[in-house]
Amino acid sequence: MKCLNCGQENKDAAKTCKKCGRDLTIPPAWFPDARWHLRTLAIIYACIIVAYFGISYLLRRLPRPYKIRHIPEEMTPWLRHGNKHIPEDQLQAPPPAAPAEAATHPSQK
Ligand SMILES: [Zn+2]
Image 1 (tube, rainbow, N blue to C red):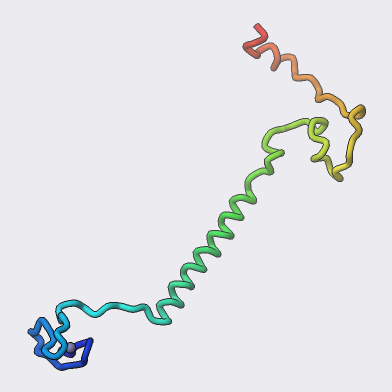
Image 2 (tube, protein in one colour):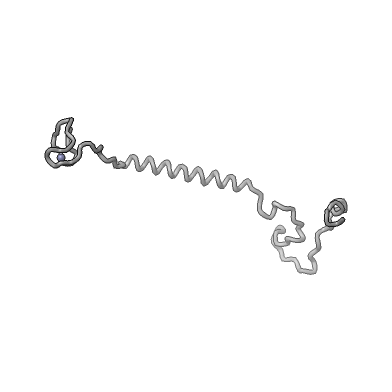
């Protein structure tokens, strides 16, 4: 067995180097080489790219926040096409709720 520290040839059963005294029972340390770095970085970048496109695809499928609820257009004039300013006196109130819907409301009884 060759000593990793000084290169001295020792017996296979030896526990320490006879020249420098290094413990031969400790396995040599592993250091990553350039190929390992390239492969690891490629995997990390691939995961980031896949996650970016996957998350952006899922977020694109969500409805726009102002389209989740059906808000009358008169109440949100800034969302109107063209984004034109509407004077306050020209704004109209939303149409009243359906009578059947109002009769079933518990606070009406
Ligand atoms: Zn040695």
